[in-house]
Amino acid sequence: MKWGIIATWAMAYEGISKAAKELAEDSIAGDALEHSIKIVEDNPLYRSVGYGGLPNEQGIVELDAAFMDGDQFNIGAVAGIQDVKNPISVARKLSNHQFNRFLVGQGATAFAQKNGFERMNMLTDESRTIWEKRVEEMKTKDLSPYDGHDTVGVVCLDHRKSMAAGTSSSGLFMKKQGRVGDSPLSGSGFYVDSEIGGATATGLGEDLMKGCLSYEIVQLMGEGLSPQEAANKALYDFEEKLIRRKGKAGAMSLICMNNEGQWGVATNVEFPFVVATEEEEPTVYIANKGEGYSTIIDKATKEQIEKCE
Ligand code: ASP
Image (cartoon, rainbow, N blue to C red):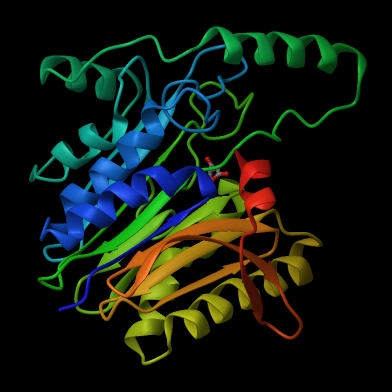
C-alpha cells in the first residue's frame, strides 16, 4: 500500500521530510503526523505556530490544535492553551478519551500539566518585540491587527491505509483573548475518514468555519471526485457564495489527500504547501487560484522557498 503526507505552508518542509522517512519505514499515520507538527511547533522562527507564535492583544500566546484519527473518527482538540510546548500532542492524547475531548483555556492547560506534558513560556523575545511594535503602530496608523497567521495542517496516509489529520496554530496575531479559529474545529479546520481521505485548512478562521470546508472536501471525495476536483469545488463554490452574499471573502487555502495518496489543493491567495509520497520526494509547491474554478500548481523555486522561510 502507498503512503503519503501533505501539509500547509513551506514551514512544514522539515517535519514532512522526517515524517516521510518514518512512513517509508512503516510508521503509523498518527505518529508520523504528530512528529511532523511538533517540528514546526518547536521552531521559534515560525511566528504562527507553537513556540515563537505571535500573541493575542494582551501579549499572551494562546494556541489551538487538533488531532483526528480517520479509522475510528477519534478527535481531540485544545483551544487557547498556554505555556505548553506541544499542543498537538495534548490534542492527540485527548483523542483517545471517550468524554472531554475538546478542552479550552485553563482547562486545557491544566489537563496538559496534570498529564506531564512539557510546560514552557511560548513567547519568545522576538515575538514580544513584534507585538510591542504592533501595539505602538496601531496607536498612530489605521492598521488591521489581524495580518499575522498561518496554521500548520497535515493529512497523512500510512501503509495500512490508516489516515490522520492534525492542525496547530497560534491563530490570528492580536486576536481577542479567548478567540478560537477554525483550526481546532472538526469539519472546518480538519477532517479525515480513512475510507475516503482527509483535508485541513488555513486562512481566515472566521470565514473558513462558515463553510465547514474540510468536511465538504472529504464528502466530495467520497462521492467520487478526485482530491483536486473536490478542493476546487468546495472552496471556489463557497468563496463565490460568500462574495455574493457578504461582499467579500477572507484568505482561505485547503489541502487534501485521498486514501490512494492522490492529493489536491485550492486557495484564493498565493499558497505554498509540501507533499511527500511513496513516489515523490518531499516537495514544496506553490498554488494560486486560476481561471474558472481551477488551481495553478507549480514547484516552488529555491528563491520562493527562501522567501517563505
Ligand atoms: N486559520 C487560522 C485561524 O483563523 C489562521 C491561519 O491558518 O492562518 O486561527
